[in-house]
Figure 1 (cartoon, one colour):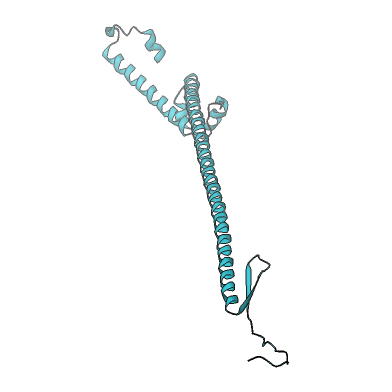
Figure 2 (tube, helix red, strand yellow):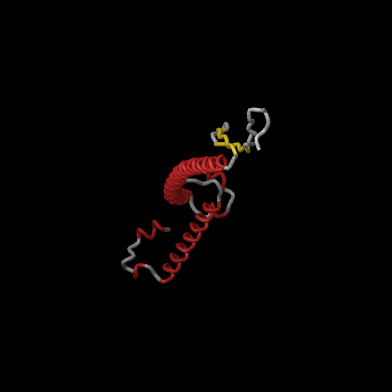
Length: 200
């Protein structure tokens, strides 16, 4: 019918009588409905991709009345249009998948960089804390040595005071390097006079 319409001079509406116009209208409407039905059949048929062949699709649909409602040349043309549309959709989906994969890769890369920077900051902070710990330990050791030295001086001073008061003190270092004092009271030994008797 479309071919017949092309052959008619549509610029001159008077060329068709009202009955012919009505008949042409109904025929075109019927063809358009049949094509719409066939397109919906193509969409509903599973497994059709941009690479599917017409003979394979034809075997899946040939029993459906929507298939028979459209002439074979027009079915093939509609199938090719449908495949071209599927090809565009598949290309778009691949493009979107590629963009998503790229975005995911970039996000993963950004997260990896952030995690590495965080780990480096923790390591640097830990290194700073270790340095501070070493400094504080050295300061503690220095102060402890100074305290031991002060204790030793104090004990020597006490020992000299005790010695003056009749107490003898001896100082020695133990295994750890600490100064240890021993205080012994000195007993006055009675001095003997020439007779061997004690002096009073």
